[in-house]
Image (cartoon, rainbow, N blue to C red):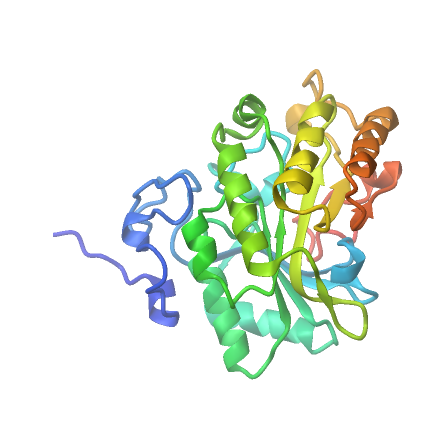
Length: 321
């Protein structure tokens, strides 16, 4: 008989609200992998806390960063496979990546050291495949008597049932809305069902949080929903469709972050579209649609932002290059 190691997450957090990681159906992939024994699921993840970086990040929307920045926890691996991913050093599903295995205690101690500097927001980046680990961290920090704002920064490739289980635990949802074109989602991210999955997921986030955001006396977010969209070169109609979904199917009052920061990675240098940065005329077309739809809440970027958000996860702070 093969011995079965203990699942670290199960021993440190009540996971009754989640599917068992012995038969993982946590995300829409529903791989049914026993994550204790191997890492053959789509994300290639096990059951522990494998972290790419825990750092102060000042490059987020003003209500998240303020003047001090926020504490971001970057999990490794991903349940998508975006060929242009800026975080490929830590997000690849297969092969070597940067990052290290940590205990729950080590993760919490590192976060709390950052919180001691006066930072009050903790973001979890790409947690869709590690929801039990994220919840273990949140519960441990709250059990220590701390109450920062917890942000789920997700690609929105999430199951509605999983998000429903997080109601009352996550303060701020920060989803990407990448695609409304299933062919594009398949070609660029290996997720042909992304439009239907992500729109249902964001609709659930909207059900929980509504369109209005709650700010503290420093102008930092305490609760709410912010939908991000990265405009991709040559895919302006896709961007317009994403904006139309938010305005017409949810609410024109939702806060949006429409980003021009796309920067080609080495993996797509020779791609006919993704091998270049965004043209200003392309971004202007998307902003015109933003205005036409009456989407007036949120943030846009300068065109030179493409060089400002490229991380290097070999550094102790990937964004301080």
